[in-house]
Image (cartoon, one colour):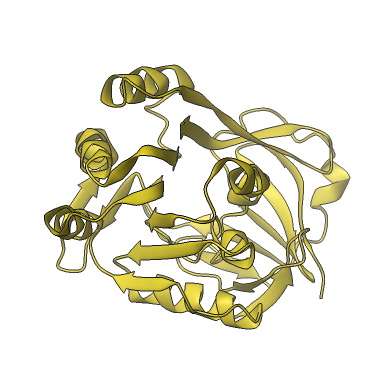
Length: 271
């Protein structure tokens, strides 16, 4: 089984290896020219948008699914879809080792907007008890699949198909407390009954609701990708909501095989 590789980026695209397959996908933040054009030759498929969000994979017909391995030895299900996603968000792999050091493995960890578990499967392997919440059944099925192919027991894990706000409200009524909360906030999403989430309108409410079930000594990890935000305004926002905690924020930077750094979202640590 072959690993994932981010080869190069530029001209608002990126080229990656997912096992045996070289794929090109849109990458709007890569405004510069390609660093090493030779790494882009003979792609197996390229995703091209045909609308605002959706598009198609052009080139060699890709399998419906296959598996790859990350550098830490974990296996992942790859499943191309009409939005250009592949079932994993590899930028999360760049900071999970740090999470193992700063979060409490003995406590309860809540992961909102889990998707396929790119940011938490390694935590499960390390012994964390994770409550995974997502409103997408396909996402929760893929998360479960990723646990299974890595022979990770579901003992101590909770997998919950529910809208994030509804879950937070229910846990607050129950008086639940979590030692760690992880939020991978989407720019836009819909809940199980069509509830609309827009990060520009809902991020503050989401953080304030999460605060209500975070233990006094608990820690919160926020990741997001919306271009409206910056590390600075996220730090100011979180510092106001969590005035008694230390807030650190920065960009998630992935290093391509070509040597160039690709900005791939923001990481905020409320400690």
